[in-house]
Length: 305
Image 1 (tube, rainbow, N blue to C red):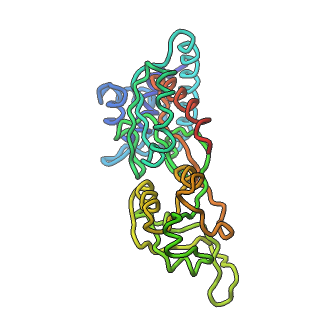
Image 2 (image 1 turned 60 degrees about the vertical axis):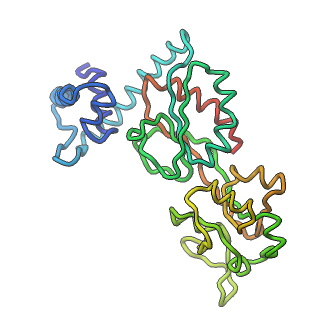
Image 3 (image 1 turned 45 degrees about the vertical axis):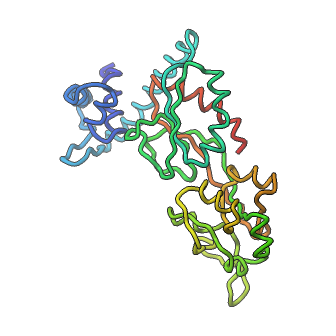
């Protein structure tokens, strides 16, 4: 074989990291060492894999093809190493996990005592961000993301999906009356998100005012104008629980409130069955793989999504 695994790893890490400098930091090597490994690989293959400019790196057509094969080779090697390692030791070391605060509070944190009892050698670091963060920049190992995935450089594992529901507290509805139509809903105090704007489109079928017919547009959901906005779903949940108004939230954070009667579903007959996919994303790494796998294998069946 012409190429070495070190050269393959350097090439893949440069592409995933976006620069030779970032790859060198991740691999704990010198910038010149990573640059030489990439140059040796191109020399052995007798083809340019990457176009270098002053601002960024760009894959050539040959580089695109080789990247797919290189990933597969490294993954196979890592899997072989992991299968041997699993026979001789338990997973250990630090594992950084990030999720939006509502998901962390309602779905992750309640299970961490049991996880630590099973894997006492794993040191967990849990963080919360309301927006999508860069795993490398934030030094994260796993990020739980809600919604469609866009970053193709990450490995992903589907964990399930969560239905969106429109809810309010019984006390608010006793004061303002239950809305029976979309038009009636508009007259209420509505709690929305500061960003992204798509979260202020609620999954409701609503009729055309002139004809009474159902609307057939690219996005049939109802665009609301919030009376108050918040950046966190947990803040919106607390506003609804404190009788401020009506909110649209994922079932994973309000299922208990609905079950216990603290929040009441609204307009269920007009609700579009819209579900937000929940995924775990991570960079594949031999050093991390066993910890990532243990965590995801543990948490996935407990989410009940």
